[in-house]
Length: 149
Image (cartoon, rainbow, N blue to C red):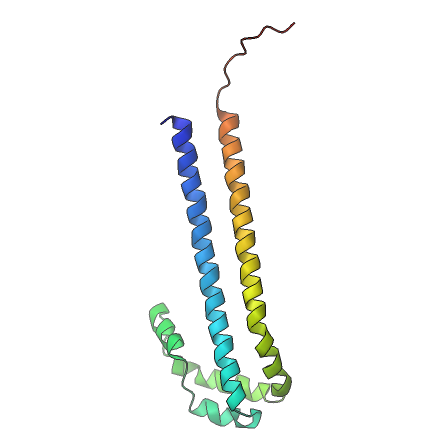
C-alpha cells in the first residue's frame, strides 16, 4: 500500500467516524426529545390543566429520565419538582392549545432528525471529497513524456 493510499484511508476513516459519532449524538437527542414529548402528550391527555399543580406535587418522572439523570450526574430528578410545578402553573393558562401543539411536534422532531442526518451525510461527503482532492494535489506529478510542439 502506498503512502498516499494509506493517507486516504486514514482520513476517510477519521471523517466517517466523526460523521458517525455526530449522527449518533443527533439521533440520541432526537430520541430523548421525542420520548419527552410523548410523555408530556400522554400525561396531558389524561390530566386537565387545572389539576397540574396537584400532579406536580406527586410527580413521578419517567423511568428513562431518572436513569439518564443518574448516569449523567445531574442529581435527583425530584429536586426539579419545584421548578416543574412553577412552570406548569404558568402553563395552565395556555394548556388548551399547548396540548394540540405537542401532538404535532413529534413528527416535526422526526422531520428535523432526517434533515439533520442528511446534512451530516452531505457534509461528510463534501469533506471526504475535499480531502481526497487535497491529497491528489499534494502528490508530485510525473514529467510529461510528450514534448510540446
